[in-house]
Length: 275
Image (tube, rainbow, N blue to C red):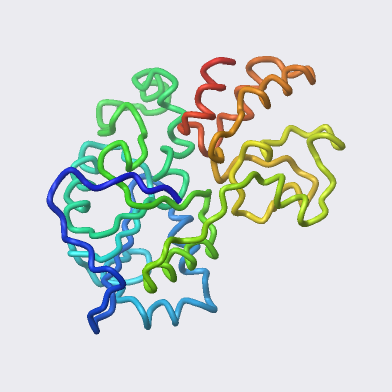
């Protein structure tokens, strides 16, 4: 989780610990994304009823036809900002939210669609669409934090249900969420996994990727894809150099980092250096 400060425009004042009898008003909205992070919430079958009892979910198009423009005590935002309309809407939503949480790789780093940030957007449109002039989109795919202040971020493609539950729990009791910031390698060690990078010769982003998935891919003898993005102070340059020493060419190294979190600065600098 990262706290990025206070929004530079008027918004509802926080109510510590929500001491009022009412349930906190919660909204879930999306921009450019696959809906996977919203589905993570809906897949929390054992906890979903308890969440609905403790929170008043007033906006969640994936789950209910109820609509609300706010105000929200907590607003979860999935997806990157990819159109002019979305850029305007996120500013309006920020004004209605006491706590705004960006969820998932798209909302926190621009998502896999941020690959277009590295190339010529006009060339992409002209090669894909028969009438590119009909496509109304920004030339870049950017995280929510590029447009408004974000109070917290949940990483992953998709996010971890356990981390979402921890965030909601911490909000109800007024404490800081206990979210890990360690490499996937630490999780592999706890699970007793044989290192697929050193022992198996697999390309693996585990040494520089934030844990949250339970080391899912390495547990099945596959390299980490970096779904949860770079952990704090990740030494991506060292890992990229190691890939090179193992015989990978520059374009191959770039592809290893050009995945779900290609827009994250620590990953993007490797892609730009190697391509």
